[in-house]
Figure 1 (cartoon, one colour):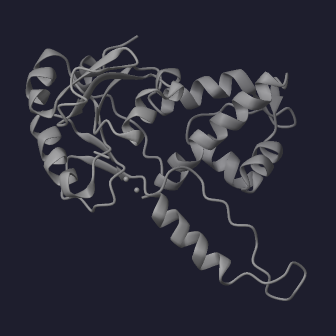
Figure 2 (tube, helix red, strand yellow):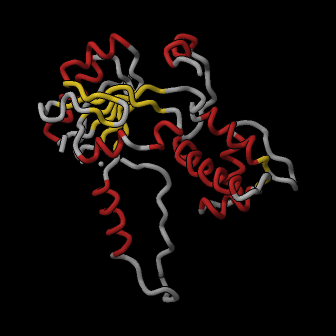
Length: 242
């Protein structure tokens, strides 16, 4: 598979796709994979929209940003559409990932089959706990976070995953950025300061629960006037060293 560093040098131009659409593409992809496994080789925008909880017109608009793939009256070729979404999401590359913080969360992430299945290869696990350093988690040996610069010089690191306590998160983010990592996925409940060239995403379960609490407090019994619709979040929103 292509090397991410060589692709960066080529600097291909991409059409602009709205963030909301980018957030829906992995949902479409998961649905398409499930229906394909069930034997459905062609899918309509109506079916895809129903399963994704968006209207069919939005599905067609989202997919039109990727190219002209559908056939009026026949729908989309399921396998081909999966390939196109993979390409647009950059999943035709192998992205090297470093996880910092090998507590319960970090271990769970390191063992995640979803990483490898989607083209994300965990190449480094880092911590500061002497009891953890030297331990093998999966196929990777945990090293001290101070070795990050050395590791980054040995191989490019595309994505840094921060699974530390909040008190350590900013220092870890700084070390990752100094080592050339430009994409950070932060699980620590801490707002981070990063440069404009860095892509930063938050995964915070407590924020999701607070949002659900907001809607839960405004729900009324089904059938009553003003009843809230079912709210379904799509994708990861803006969340956890144990």
